[in-house]
Length: 395
Image (cartoon, rainbow, N blue to C red; front, side, top):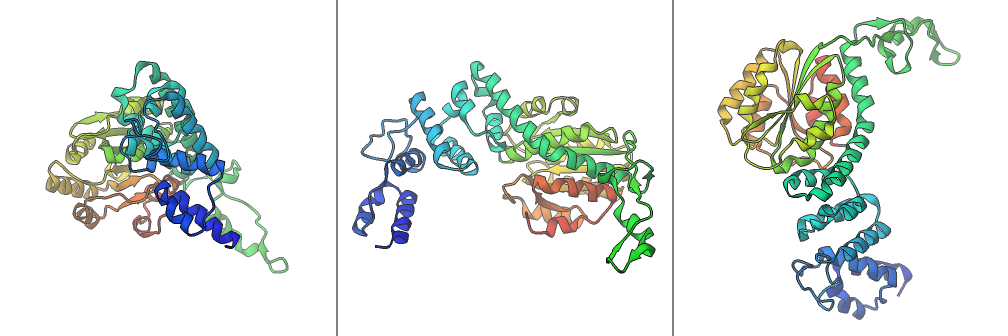
């Protein structure tokens, strides 16, 4: 058998698990190497259909004897998956370990929690388990959440700042040069007369820059987040973005979380976003209408107000009143956006009927990745048409 065929058999054997070994032997597949066997065992601990791996599973019945009752075995398993798989795959396997096997030991022991690959999904799980995390682990959990928050802020903060300030000051020019503040459209238009045919480019006599003066509370931005369990990733990103908005003097920022009750997180959003994240309680029902009614008090100048509603639109409250309320707000000039998800996970399940009703009011409803958020915010503050964001392919 050709080497390429043997490699294919090896890969399929690792995918299908120990129970397929006999079939692969009959096709001439070679035994797994020692490293393959370790990889096979690490995968089998989570993906073999043998029930809870901590409940007496024998070595003969699966690729792994299980992880549930042994911290050393759990630590070895974490080391194995990080050895054999890249970071993005490790994150998926860890999430499956928690969801499929209930391995909350990953999160309840400080030593093992330190070894887990930290990401937004892990933060969402910690939020959901907040009331069950032992005291000895809480400080480690906070450190993990803080590390993820800092990483996300590092990626988004500068882009959001530039987007907001560029949009709010787009008509004002400054004599102070800044490469990130060049008004390209105005500069090119005013220098077209200086086109040099020999080199095929414009030689500008002058470059115009956007003003970066920060007018206080030029716009009101309201982030209204659904804290039901399915929205965990979106709440994490929403809280971080809310803290970035709050750091900009040009914006009067309010952050609200809701299920059947409404929690105002505005006081914490300007400080440490980790505090805001731990102020969220995932789970429970959903009353979107109640939360939007609460947010109405923050609208001082409708034409200078942006409402970012983050929810999958499964309304447990008064849906018809919600549609009427949102219609009145947009008619008054409020720029409203409904993000069915603010995450990299793509579009979730959502109430298509309610989404269509809001879209008919001119409120775009779509899933948005965090990377696209700065462009979305800039377009909203400029008063641009947001429909392209709802129809554009997800990146």
